[in-house]
Length: 246
Image (tube, rainbow, N blue to C red):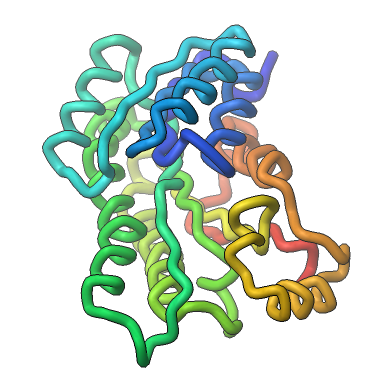
């Protein structure tokens, strides 16, 4: 039996990068996969094709996790076409490299709204069904930057640290309903993520990383699949760091 057989998963920010890897791995493990995307229709189509190539059922939604009504409507649509959402992965997020002294208020608000409020709105929309079924898995995608002191944009670190606190508090709140809530905190990953780092900072990261390399999206997605599976039945409120031992 595959790891996620019979499960329905909603993954926010699924059109590219880690989000696409999550969709592919979850589909391979037997889940029906719904995902959100914002602006890149071509990338979203590629993700949907990757899901279906695994023989899984897929749903694609162009919506913003910051839009409460649209998020609720999406969840209702998924629930009508399936037997409910068993797994939620709050992956949607944005980043920006700017020092605090030069940061505009709009920069702070945009990042906090997407990375933190988005997780709140989506979790709230999905939780009603999970509570009714007295079962569910929520996984928040954090970052190494939210778990330890490191040189990274202040608003990004603050948002990811907030997700860690959100994870711990929500795990306490909903554990009585058989719902687990955990956080996956990757280090520097391939492609776009590592490309956002100045060369000097990336070199410093690699010097401090015991494995001597950045991680891949697929490696993190494999860990995520276990975290939301039935095999992970007692871990809740935890932050799992996947960083090659930095």
